[in-house]
Amino acid sequence: MKTKRLRVLFVVDAMKGRNGVGAYFQDLSAHLRPLVERVELVAPSLSEPHPCQGVSMPIPGDATQRLFLPRMRRLAALVEEMRPHVIVIPGPGLFALGAFWIARRRGIPLCVTYQTDYHQLVRLYWGPRLARLAGGLIDALNRLLFRGSRTVTTICESMLAEARAAGARQPCLVGTPLGEAFVNRPPRPMAAALESVLYVGRLAAEKNIDAVLALAEHCPQLRVVIAGDGPLRDRVRERATALPNLDYLGWCSREQVVEAVDAAQVLVLPSTVEAFGTVALEAMARQRLVIATPACGINEWPQLARALTVIAPGESLADTVRRLAAHTPAQRQAQALAARAAAMAMNRGAVEHWARVLADCAGPEAPQPAAKVRSRKPLFRKALGRLGAASRPGL
Image 1: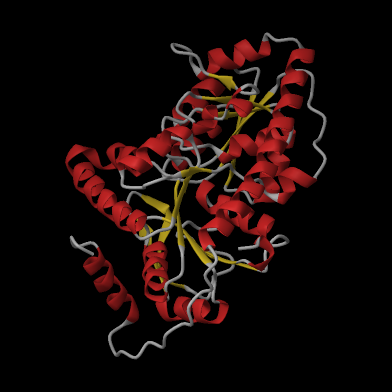
Image 2: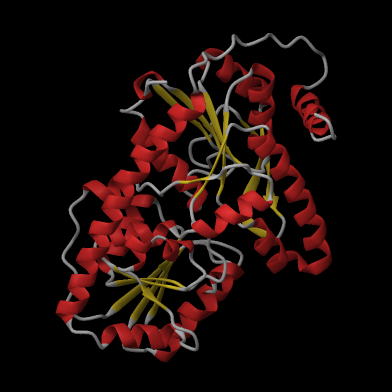
């Protein structure tokens, strides 16, 4: 199908602008709008609630994030009105599963994205016994989604193998797009001296926030800034009160993130679990230096890895910052320029590749007319029943 004729519906459980997955699809949908006939993004939002989002509840273990229930009739009505050629879902999640059922029922091709390592996250938060149970459920849901999709995409090489192990037949590697504010606004010149270090992201165990706090403690000559929200917020606030060189900004909008990145020389991403690390790519696009751990999936893209500084085995984050500070201003400037060039190339390639992937996923077929739902059973309960039937052998 020609790209200009495409109608694409993204249905995402992640809140817009609150984490990497939410930002990913917010940016991708914005880039695709000039290229295709129509793009719609269904994603929950605290500031601008989507008509398809229903009631919500705090996520266990992290009250700063919420689990939203979809309004299935509203979602079905949107699909009926839009008649998309492709529905894209990152799964598993309640919005994604609801969209999966609607797409299967109406014969609409599905593209499933695999960009979160849920196994590592549940092991980190829930302990071995609950992690095994949760991991088994996640695997079952992923197999269901992968079997029912036409295309499976992922964002780094290591997750290709994981997707195949979870049942994806031929997963496709795609790049990461960037928000307009990071791409189109000219970058601010970077100061010659390395004086300010920034962390942006969730304040959670997998992000290794303690390494950033230790950096502020061991390098009092540096201004260390933390932006974000999460279950470790109180610990960060406490240390910011005790350390004069540590500033805590709280949760920031995308515009505020651009300002914070431009005000620093280095962004740090010391995560122990990080499928990609979109904020690192954003900092590179702003012509800033980035320090990351080997666990970050962005290292698996060679054109990006060449412009990163990676924490070496046995090094602390403070050691790596000192190593970068020992470079000459000219060396740091050359690395920052290379970082922006690599990030801009990634952005262009990601959008172009996604357009081709979606056109191939849609195929030559036109979407089938939507069928009317005539049932007194609540639509979401009916959807879950169909999902359970689809997961039985032989279907």
